[in-house]
Length: 224
Image (cartoon, rainbow, N blue to C red; front, side, top):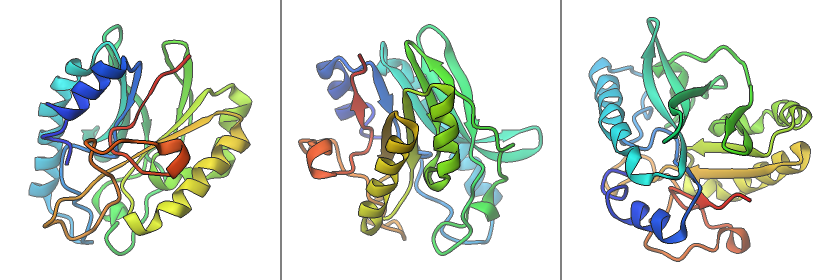
């Protein structure tokens, strides 16, 4: 989880690098809960509450713009909500995850509803940003549509196993080529006792993402 990292390593890293944009993983402020098809209201509400608490601490990453996703309750539905945050604009809803897997360790369709299927650009400072959350990265028609709309960055917060890293790198590169944009992704990590081994890495390792394909949680970039 990012709970301990955001107060120390991530904030320090962002300040030292003067990062202008921070991409968080998919639902980073709780353990990955969709490991069973049996929905548990108490687990869901705990995840929502955890993100409410830690959302208030995004100010510590300012002046960087922060992107990510979080579980929410909206109009009687449970959703996976992509968001942008900045000092200037505050919290803004960017996208609702539409393509939901329902398979071993990733029973998302059993836990929350899909969004409305819209893939629209979000303006973050000078960059036009499109969200393709986790499995949505494989919907290449949306990458192509973003490209036609003038996207600069396609961002993919995700929660995927370490063993599948190579496949996700291929998908990200394909999305970049199809859209003519940068493709950025940040992966959720799991604790030692979590039932599924997600592939995000700790920030205390030196990141050379472009050359090595390392999959770093809380990835940061400088735009411009």
